[in-house]
Image (cartoon, rainbow, N blue to C red):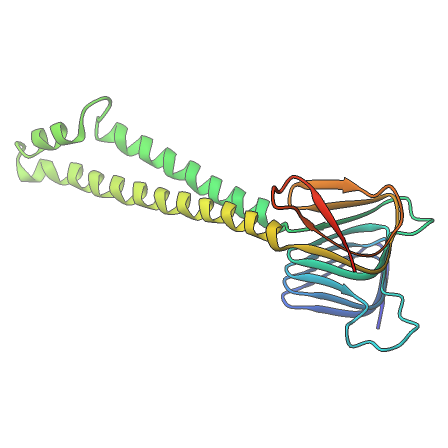
Length: 231
């Protein structure tokens, strides 16, 4: 079965998506998107790879083409052809996690929350510019009942600061994972890569100026240029 949409047809999957063809559709999958025949004027986001035609397809009639629209894949895009003589714009992006911005924004929101809580607790403890050790020394001189709210506040402060550091570490790991994605990502075109196709691997962009046959695209070692490897 294929999907013939109207531009607002949407399909979301937690796993892979398999279809005969896609036309004027929006598809988002956590895993692979595998299309037997062609992808036309569609917007695709894949948590792994986009493949057309299906590697198991032996029919010579299967086009395996991507024409128009936008394809975003975390790992790779493999197709017989990308673009066409008649398509105004085709965009193919690999080496980017399409959920990166959402995850990053979530981390930032959590960090902002921690900062707000830390400021409130420090004001409650009347830390100001005081050294924590100095303040603790003064608190220990207070009766035990009066020490309790301060000790509770210090415990909470330590918990929030520890949480903030944990989130900062996760955000840093996310950035490193993003860099590794672009290094290992690729676009393989088994037949024809047409001109006027916008290619993006990681943060590097390139618009094809001429038609190219049988080529694999990947990021150069300096991560500043896209390499075209014929096969």
